[in-house]
Length: 464
Image (cartoon, rainbow, N blue to C red; front, side, top):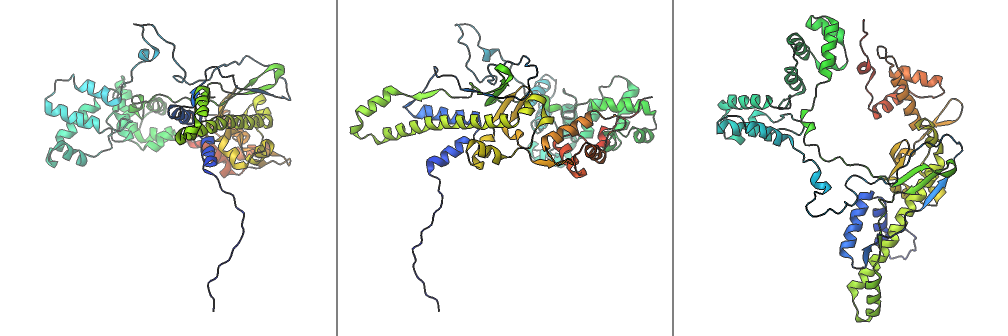
């Protein structure tokens, strides 16, 4: 028979303090999110202030094994458009913001056309209902059975709604108001000037669109009973139509990536790694307020004391965050120096553990550092995670990175014969001849990751 009993036991376990949890959360934020957090702290904490005279970030040079031509690649500032301050303008002058063109949405564009048409108020209201029901790409995916109650109409009045839809489909851009892809392309085919070519294009569009996507010109020519060369010309014309006419409108402002790290060739053909000055915040402790508080701290201002501790912790966190990012970036450049010299095909296998051991951090910390952080290189802007890839064994006993393998697959596809493209099996065989033991499904996975179409969609018809 068992009886309950109390027992004292000593155990050791790790716990994260609220301060440490906050530091971990801020470390994995992007530069934009971190800047917003810091701006919020500046607006609420009287002991923090901006420091426009802060020194520039530190620079470190990495040794380079090769010394090719340095080239001319100089970018002093990598701030995103609109990210920096604007020049002060004189009274009466227009600022840069006022000179920016105002965007027009798809619905505004369509309403402006309907409003100039001599239509009865009822017809104008039905057309406006159709316009407001369109998706951002210009398609009408809401059925008439859902629109009729919104218009206060009975089911037997559906013909009026169909007329309103036809009226909207006649507006610019061509293809707007379509209910599926075939109807969208059919509406745009009406703009083909040559009557014979227009009729042939509509006959082709009545065939299964899969044949058009797979460039099966021979099958389409037999189905529409037309000359294969004319069908090939029409198919090429159809492929240049816009399947999403509404996307040219409603396009919000492009979000540019502002890199956290800039890598370029420095003196002596060494690679220079530096923090981007545009993302490093310029903050400091307000000494005037801090000294005043020290002189009157005996008054017992608990809230001010908390603000002062928070300000000092924020400054330490800013310094630690960017020094950690710089340390990790320097380690990545040292390990992947061949990538900066020769491109993606020279990428070496790299895991988080290797960088963590080199910089003396935990592997999870390196993972957080590489989240949403970007590096500007002569080859482009890459996320820090891009430089990590697993090792793939080769026939010679070495290892290659998955990034280099994807680069080889892309090169093979770009150099293939358009009339006889390579299948995934053939690509795997060619990689095997170069010493890479890669299965066909791996080639398919990497090809899909790079958004490269399958062999059937890459095949081009032979020209006579």
